[in-house]
Image 1 (spheres, rainbow, N blue to C red):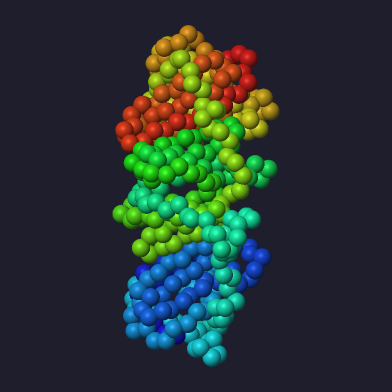
Image 2 (cartoon, rainbow, N blue to C red):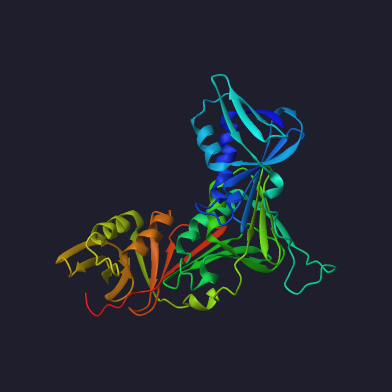
Length: 383
């Protein structure tokens, strides 16, 4: 097997595919890329058993065909340091001796036969007969929409192994919209994209790892074909294909968690508010991150205390509030995360009392989307 390819083009593909590989793998062969040459198309595959990412690029002067495993880290590190020029990649079919040549040097290593690389598991629903396959759900959407949805929700996904159903993004597919939801019990994000009309109703939970991979490998000008099966989902573009196992179980009913009546509206400049929270957040007790807020009609005061080191922080920013004076507490790190994701100049925080969650929404938003961020309050007796 032999082919020529531009080093930087090759590097961009192997770098993207390598994001699937774990730092430690139970199967040693998963530390490798699976390279498969058919005609002038080279397929590069990486897997961690649960996720499988395949990239395809066109090469030149291809000779022979084959399927071989090569060390992923070594190949990525080598291509990263090479100048942007053509290289020749050759694997001896008999001895598995491998060689990369370019104008100034030669690099040699040994490949592994491709049949040692694990095959993807066949999709079949629990208890289903092989003669009665389950029809997958297929729809298309722009890559930009997927990336935006992931960026707006992934930060609130749980990292608690005892709540595996929350360790990913819920894709709640409606006939006329697509709702993305994450929660870690302290905060919840519900992002709705009204441009995606799949014409069907279904849902699945995409784990955080493949969601982050998608965010990094998709390009805005691509269209993505999404295929949902009973146990896995695949995302396919012209050059990439990612297949991931779904999280089993039922996601919490997010519609019951979001308060329907928070009568008081607090409007504040997002950047000014975020900067102030960051400053007073320097003095929070790291065990809980509590910031106390006293909200008045034209002013919001914030205070932090760390009794362990006898430190305090206090600041105020102007605001507009249509309720009576209210004292409430929130986590500084969680607030900063939410403010960092939103992009509107001002935000609206809908409140009821100090014991009920706050609803945070951008004051300006594209009519095709809807963003709702819920943050649970922390116990505060006085300011």
